[in-house]
Image (tube, rainbow, N blue to C red; front, side, top):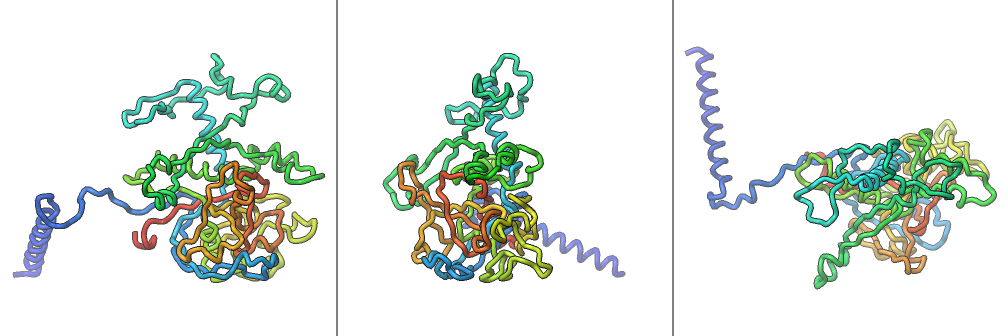
Length: 424
């Protein structure tokens, strides 16, 4: 017998063996098999790759100030912690990205005014579902259905027809997992919090933040002008940032092709932010690792204030594009300078003395009637108007959660589900 016949018989035997194994596996997977095989109709999960985000792997971080503690208050005591892997926006949220959120809110109000609704059998709430497929004829509002969305009467400037941005209100929700874990006798409703927030950036902060300084052009142009589309959004407070993350999660779920929802987008904890900023470099004082703010050619490595009255030496008088300068080793841009960034974490001076060493974080839901001290939230990274000390990866700073500044923005994170992205 020639080699062809031998190979054919081997192939037939292999095929028969494969069919037997497949049949056995199929019989074991039947519900009536009586074997402990788990639920067989589970959805598949192959991981995700969110657009515009980079993966930061799990790891250990030695937190604390990387230089002299100038405040002498020991607010950054050295401590070793572990951080779970997550995705993070490679840049700060830009004006154009945040404008997508603002446009979504304004469009939703227009659809409601025009009675653009659709029946949804799966909707169990009393609120009607918006039909997003219908067009909004902003310039052909013959019956005046959209008129209430614009400034009226004496509020109009120079006769211009402009949207009344104070009406752009969005309701976001959050779940109090801490209370749910510690108050076992309470009902689920008491843990669900809803809050309405105005979403349009406070453009007047460009004027309010400075005395005897001409910044009116930035107020008039920074958020809407195409020249600043790729610049980081500012004038958003902590709650506006959280509302954006909630909206982003809703849009992600609405268009996701996955059978299961992922974790929600959220603000990073302060230690997730510090871990990401260091780019895998242990105890690096700056995202690029060195102890200096200039490279070998003398060029500044970030957008900050290098000297008294000297703002433009780094290439930007105010903010710069969100992907300016080189990224750190994780691929994250402007983790030092440009704009400081909100984190999820509540600010306490002595927090490092009692936080856990596994995914440490401190949260406090400050009410309007609470003291200003209770409304402090950690900001990180320093900004275009700050000196180099605030750009260090270990420097802690804070701002009140209901405050808007022309030098504070944010970026989102998404917790990674699994041990490592290499598992997929």
